[in-house]
Amino acid sequence: MHEKAPILKATKRERLGSRYAARSRAAGKLPGVIYGHGQAPVAVDFEGKDTVDHIEKGEKVFRLEMGGETAGQVMLLKEVQFDYLGDTIVHADFARVDLNERVKTKVHVELRGEAIGLKIAGAILMHPTNEIEIECRVADLPDVITLDISGLELNQSITADKVALPMKDMKLLTDPHSIIAQIVEAKEEVVAEAAAVGAEATAPEVIGEKERLEKAAAEGKAPAGGAKPAAGAAAAKPAAKK
Image (cartoon, one colour):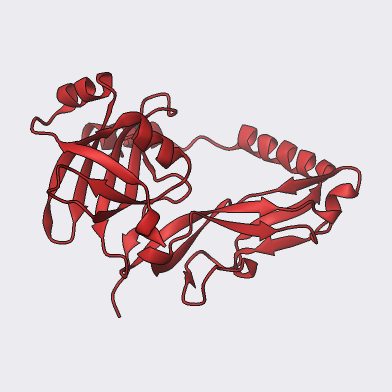
């Protein structure tokens, strides 16, 4: 399946640090790291526009071209980092993988069809879970999973366990009861939203919470911002080999 995976061209980056990464981005490159399979991590510069275009399309598996040194190497997108506005990719991490290796990853669920329940006045379609986590071989990893909602009626829902996976040996890891799509009446949503706002307005202040958070931040316990899982598919972890 992935013999035709996109090829990402990269060059090894000798100098590390935010200053040199900024220079790479200014030159149209995308800084990144390649690691895994018992080899030392390598800092690289990818061709910026081409790499970002593939990531934004939701692609996860790539072949690496880097001066012949690692030609033919297959990589799995693990994580992307965005700028402070959250809309521009500034860094990407990739893991070396084998096509027969089983991995855990998230895949975007795309809704298809016109739901019959939407023909009723006041009905709206909810899509609370837009991706599911699965386990499968790298070679079988889908870019997207489609879900036909044409038969979905008012006050009905489709849960994760009802989503047909492309291959039999794929395993669903997401909670099977997670709602992927449902049709509800708009007035119910308005009432629920108003109730939530009212509850928030009357919620008591937690004494000492501000001080606790400030102390955690001062001790370096607060999580760093800017990093997000891979598009359509957040972070993928190698599955335990059986």
